[in-house]
Length: 92
Image (tube, rainbow, N blue to C red; front, side):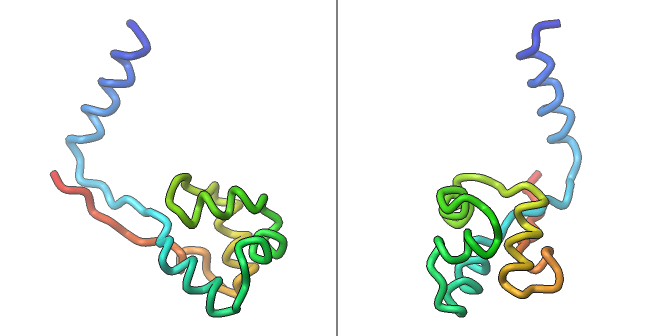
């Protein structure tokens, strides 16, 4: 089977189910950072994540790995990394 048809099959199978998907709430992340009067650079240093990566996460261009989400939450003093997540139920 060609890899492209395998990917399409997975996407079609996935779309049959209503699944609770979690996304990063970038507004919440930005608000928490700004509440502390931190620049993205300062958050990156505190979270031990590259500053460009923090910017990409805040702009919604990339989804952080679980370890990055934990580091961001810890740097911001949040006890639960899920605080930075937004639950979305896809249409379908």
